[in-house]
Length: 207
Image 1: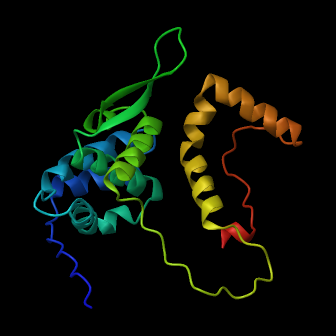
Image 2: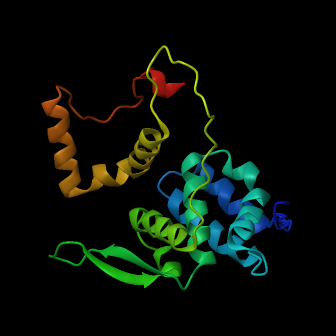
């Protein structure tokens, strides 16, 4: 019994305009999201519709791997935005903030979510991956794990922490979430304040 051959991934050339935006995104502060969005929009033109969805995304990501490897947030947002643009007509649920009202869920096309908040962009991309069966690739786990001398965080907790860390700037800037974060920290004996340089914390998750 033979396995089905994997489809060949078409090589994608590097476009100067995409590289320029990604380099700017890696250096940018507040403009990182905008620069990464622009890079994804330019790179979307290089998606090969003749290729399976997963392979066409992989080909473009591979072409710009040098720039994407420099910043975890830039890579994550670029991947999500490119996924939304590749499946532009897929319906996704996003939260819309109306003046004087609570955020409400509404449906838009995936390509529209690219220009929304970082939270909506990333959540919409997750919905698209689930709808098209292209969830993030997970490393294969060995059949037998060696005994651990110290408890280490599993992938579920690592993913949850990474997602929270990505959203932390928006949570801290939100009038409701900020207050809840401050209250939770006080309850644990901590206070929240800005600093020029944070204290380095070492532990099992920092390896």
